[in-house]
Length: 125
Length: 203
Image (cartoon, rainbow over all chains, first blue to last red; front, side):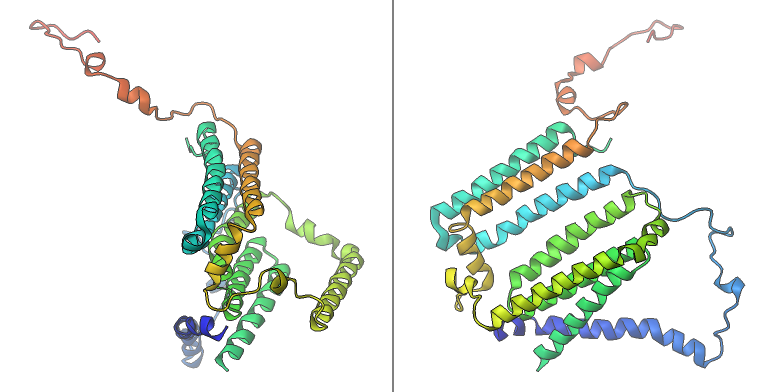
């Protein structure tokens, strides 16, 4: 247990350095602004500003349902790729049955891929 | 020692971002907090030695599922003020559900501490000499072959279902037809003319 996590110690250190640096860049200017007396907010300063006009409408726009289709196709083939990693690592030990099981899995998803292609689900006018 | 610190850091961040996921007023912010919770859960998984699960959390959950959630949130046209209005009305039912879940957790931890639950290591003890991902691979493609193929079939059904439900052909689309392009010969496309002086070309 310790050996696995110990290999990730450099990443943890890097994460710590990144956290300290990014929070310094965010909070140091605020602190300096308050200490030097330039922090004087007023309603005009804090008003939302969009090219000289007040904002016309909500920034939330409704998305087309086609984005959902793209996202779910991405999830499915992402999972397919994720299943390939342990298969590739353990291929030496699992023999022909293990190889064949992945081939059947790939064929199952290839059928789906051909279906999506033929239906035109991958096309974006 | 550093493992303990990392555990408490990741665990506290998971709990905090999970709480903010359900408390955030803007549903897009909820999804962003959920992504933070996924990242910290990946850190916890690395701490217990399950590297592959950690990578899956980052690749599949953060990379794909959270994006899907974002698209779904952006697709829905809901009045969120109206959605939050029934909080007091649903409160007793919610508290009941929380009590049931808490009781289940207490029972499960009690049974696990008493040694009653050790199914994982009875069926397939965790091998200590091979990496985690190789141990998963040796089991999933041989012993759990049918479940694995079943997962593939479920993915196929999800793919076909999503296409059937959301895909519709749009009129007025000028799609590329590669075969027609390749079948076109210069003779079909080019015409040599020799107009007389002072005359134009008939098109």
